[in-house]
Amino acid sequence: MNLKETSTLKNKQILVTGGAGFIGSNLCETLLEIGAIVTCLDNFATGHLYNIEPFLKNKNFTFVEGNICDLKTCKEACENKDFVLHQAALGSVPRSIKDPIKTNEVNINGFLNMLVAARDAQVKRFVYAASSSTYGDAEELPKVEHVIGKPLSPYAITKYVNELYAEIFHSTYGLDTIGLRYFNVFGRRQDPNGAYAAVIPLFVKKFMNHESPVINGDGTYSRDFTYIDNVVQMNLLALTTENDKAVNQIYNTAVGDRTNLLELTQLLKKYLIKFDKSIENINIYHGPEREGDIPHSLASIEKAKKLLDYNPSHPIESGIAEAIGWYWKNLKK
Image 1 (cartoon, rainbow, N blue to C red):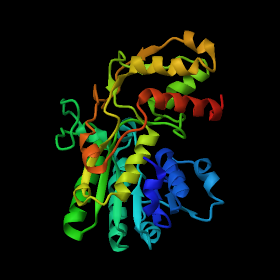
Image 2: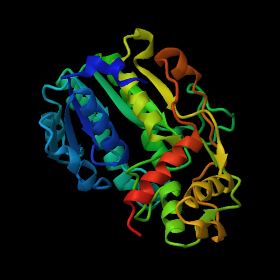
Image 3: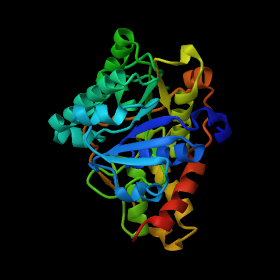
Image 4: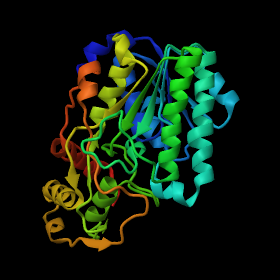
């Protein structure tokens, strides 16, 4: 997607919740490049100040430290905004299993606060981060938006409830929404630290430190790993589409290809050994399967192609190549 195609966003007031996080900060960066006026709302529960530090001197960027669980904060952040990109959430299936109450509080109560605030501020469009976890125990591959199963974790339940609330807020209050079901997003600024780090940055850090990563299970579980640039493209398309049939929909946000964990580790090694040849000899270990995990995930992106003109720019290998370059430059060993 050419940034020139998004010229309609120039000087538009856009709120990015969770804007100091991995995906949110990449959205803030691109919106500023386009010429949008960006407000970032974050409480640093999972985001980091260093992700947005380069933007703080930009006259078109405003940072608001606040929690989406506070309705007043949400309402103040939504005032005079044209659009909302709602990224704030507590991710991670294991985190939700350990603390379902906190996950529910942020992902459902906080989401509802944001919907109410956006409705009251008469925001033109509310685009939100949904999740592939909503497919639950549905075994069909590829995943198509209208066929889901039973959720397999508290996190999955919260993200499905988000979709239901968004639908109701359109039918009841006329708020236009678009939900993007993210599939295993990776790329620059994704945090490799902490108990709930995603597999790619976690494994990259392990390899860079000459430590053996541990695969949950036998390594045959597969995912539709999606590079951050594809996700940014989908958000911009969701904001700018003038196709009435494309609004108030749910879309898979993915590549439409799957890679198992054994293949993934070999890809990571392939691009890491360009910087450090000794990484090639690091062993991979296996641990128990992770509770709440589904065996395979693969998205159909036909709906997004048809209604949003989505065309993913990065298959997994080119995404891995770019991500490894960023991590090698920015990760402290």
